[in-house]
Image 1 (cartoon, helix red, strand yellow):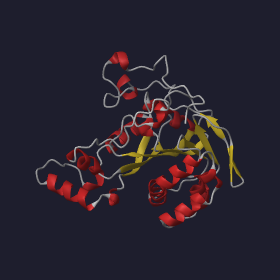
Image 2: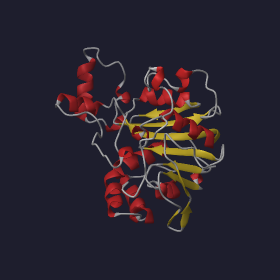
Image 3: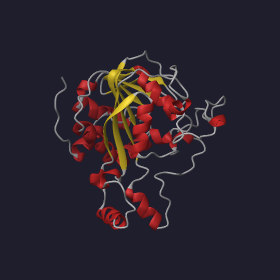
Length: 297
């Protein structure tokens, strides 16, 4: 059984990351990025520790930055080891004497280079919003490599976060990140997701929702006041807990459902709330828009 761990402070978490070789892996830009991401990454760890699930067994970390959270998992959640990485580019990495196997995987497009039901947990942090072609494909592939009862963990910006309403009223773009990056299109946000959409996508892919949070404790006083003001006019139907800045969701695999399975209907594989409702567009592309080369950064 995994050992229960109490809350970890942000300063403890930051010290854990910065003390690891993973902090110094690659370019100086990586260190800048990790430093800037510490509050968000700490929130992910805090949600993992508080969600009431004992994560045990082999873990696959998909496309979340070459093991950004590995030092914290090794220190605070060692029951999740062994730990593997799947990224668009890269090779096996050694951090602090621990070798992490790394396989090539391009979300939307590839099949993972792992056997069926070979993992107990898949981590998919701050990646869902970057998918540009076929998110259900990616979730179905996670299902394939997870054992029955295994978990997928998702963290992604909340498309209905209250901070967006403040931005709109200030005349600003409410998107979390909409900068055009011609040489790295996977590094900009594409569809951003609502809590309900995350739940529906998990259900399409054979998961049941175990827990979902929007980190509503991080709503600012101004955001809470605005929600209450709008609620007086019956324009807000959901509780404040729906309007936090980020979605953290845990799905449990309850049926084996993969990209090779015949799903019940086209709507189940290509739901209209996510894909175009025009049948001519509800299919896999023949030409892919992403080529990973030396200029990918």
